[in-house]
Length: 90
Image (cartoon, rainbow, N blue to C red; front, side, top):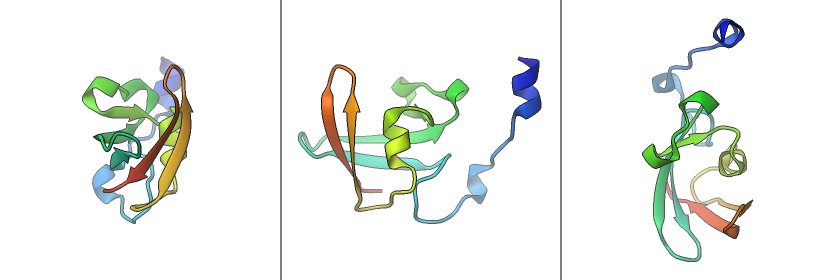
């Protein structure tokens, strides 16, 4: 725990800008198959809570989203659900 705290870096998401998805971004996606919309904020591992829409930066979906922007599509393989494709809409 002490090591984690010593290496911790606070990132103020209010100071983030740009059009690309990055750590701290809130992203709205639409499932290409079902047209279901979901919104996630990309957060650190310790803050992640998928039920609250907080997606871990190390999750397959977050890794696929990093660097993409509105209109881009990301394809991922998920355990149990197989291949999924999402379009970034916001």
